[in-house]
Length: 393
Image 1 (cartoon, helix red, strand yellow):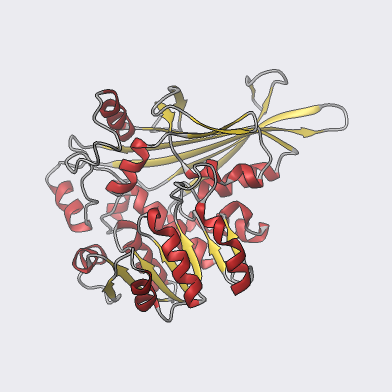
Image 2 (cartoon, rainbow, N blue to C red; image 1 turned 90 degrees about the horizontal axis):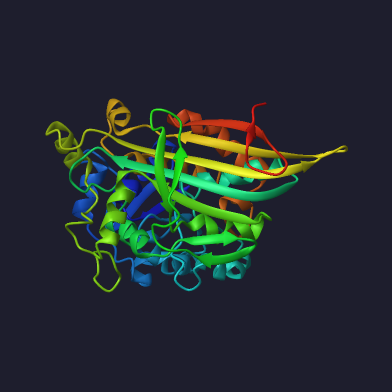
């Protein structure tokens, strides 16, 4: 395919390189082409043009004649890029939702009818979290007759004394000042920021960490397509601990704006390499766990089950051994986005989330994940009928 990527930062630049390896014709647009070139690398031949993501005409001009346009920039630009895709009659993909119009429903669904009329596909929230997490929830739900609850747990940690976020500053700040979205008792609601502290056990070497409610996009799509009672997402790690501390100190609010010294720009591969050499950045980790509880209706009695999937992504040290200098989050997101594109459902029409994809497409994506150094383990546990106590199978 001919693919145009808007936003050539840590994730977009790596995605462009992965797609070029797949044999696609790829070019990028970014508001700062010189900075984008630093992410792509001086030896890269992938073209980069200057584009203002707020300018629809500019996007259309830079993206023609693409068959697929990917918004790898901030999700606040989703609707502009969606309209650009419709104007060009191209397919569309993004990595997350902005959720300002409605905190409980992805704004991209407003364009479903228009994409159906154009016979084009808009594949949304197609990264890791959301993205891979959605696929794993759907996989577990397909194994159950009835879903009771879904718990998604994420872990982000950087071994550094200085604030070095694995996300872009805009994404990190937006998450820090937004109220978590929750689905409980079949109803959507907003939670308190950094609340409902829980100790959660990730697989070794992470082990048990403190996690808190987070403003994640999965809550804004999954309950619409998978009947369930409860859904929540929590995050742990030193990055969220730092944000929680600033929140308690009154240093985080939309009215105060984003302080650059607390939310620095995403570091280029060259800058990350320098921080590693200087010993400022030792390592970084990213992990995800999906726990789906429900029941299967047997002939004699109902069976209560928990289907758990744990995702281990390459650490910063392991990524270095591959000859790359990028964060675990950017690495995981770019590789997952590349898989969604590899199996892009061009035969469909409309707006789709990962959990809405045909079963064979979802299985194909999950089966190819191991080729990208991402390990996923699955476990099914029988639960006692009147509680969450586990019984080993």
